[in-house]
Amino acid sequence: MQETLQVAPLLRPAKPEDQDAVVGLVASAGLPTSGVEIGLAEFVVAEYAGRIVGVAGLETYGADGLLRSVAVAEDWRGRGLGGELTRAIVEGARRRRLTDLYLLTETAADFFSRFGFRPIRREDASEAIRASEEFRDLCPVSSTVMVRSMAVAS
Image (tube, rainbow, N blue to C red; front, side):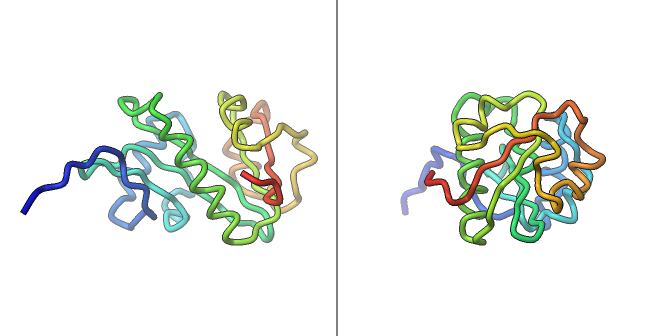
């Protein structure tokens, strides 16, 4: 029997046993880890050779979603993995028939604009998103708030 060589990370839903690796990767990217454990079931991970090399999460607030914690291991950056993870979360939001998908970023506004996100004023985010822990407490007020209408084709 021939062994298959894994050439790219496998994107899959996070499992409970991934928690430490997910939290570690999010922390190593300088992103807030609060709430990751609670929302782990809504994370997508990229696994390569048994190692979690990328993560992204989706929090749902009524008809809206919050893309959070897109993080890629340093040795995997620059290979398009962050984009794959972002597309996976956008597709998950579409499957859930969410109206809008929001995110907060301090450094990656240009990156996320490639996926249909546009900057908005903080006060223009939906009430449900403004009430989220990430919006209220975890991300600095200097963060750029971005939104993507899920009616927009990808």
